[in-house]
Image (cartoon, rainbow, N blue to C red; front, top):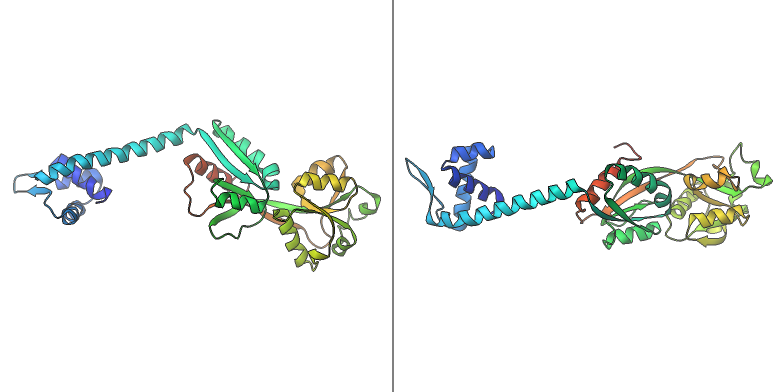
Length: 301
């Protein structure tokens, strides 16, 4: 038995007419007849008695009618409950985000979303890109934001925003010569390098770009690996080395003259940030509304 069969059956019983049931359900009379016939065939019993003068339920039909009404009523109650839940738009959403989308893109996104849905709260887990994927796969977070494209087969991803990577250096005279022509690619091998940790989206994208430019990341003179972009910027500003970071993340330190930021002299590094969810999970209604809002906020739909 399926809902369409039971719905057709109930409408026939209540209206004593196949044609009227079809009109109310916006179906043809043959379709209504087919639903009733398949239901009778499945149950192996006559449910509707048809004579030249009238149509009425058999004794078995009367028994089924009570159950069918309850099933249709519960279906309507479930539909109404979900509709009301969505309209109320209250509750919380657990989101996992890596550093760059979490610190520099999510605040503006959530602020805009709150203007439309002020009663929704967010539980944001700040981890690296690899851990974002793990949180979504384990269903500890409904939605994730990463700095690199996920490769896990059970993750659905889409581009969320466009980000630019720049080289930052201490604000020293010897680096200012690159302000007009850009930072020489090979010069990076002669400098002490500050890196994000393994699993960071920024690190993965940086290493991919360096390989494309003929630089082996293993040959960098990496002095330290840290888990936060803020720590990277602080170390660079104090003269420990140079780094590659998101342009969005570097702007505050550049504004106050703590670091200098450059493109490479031969290429501008751009990457995508990604919005992800579990392939086999159905988002909660409020999470689905946020997901739909987020996917078109920074990039055109």
